[in-house]
Image (tube, rainbow, N blue to C red; front, side, top):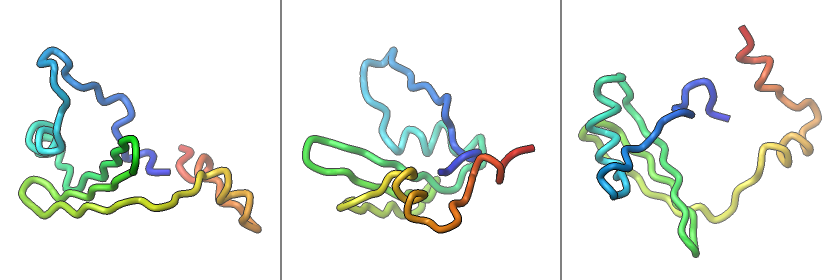
Length: 90
């Protein structure tokens, strides 16, 4: 849905034996690449959260996701489904 402006092949540094935090991405990755906003989805056993952060020093908004729909379900309900594959074809 967010292609082509996503980091699909981003790999975390596992040599430090810790999970990377959102602030780590903001300082190490976003500034050199000119990224201004981060959308982060996190999930634990009981809930799904969405965090929207403005980098490098802006506010971070946190939301609890109550329901969501898969792309296949949305397309099945549309009269004229939008095909994103042809929209970004070059």
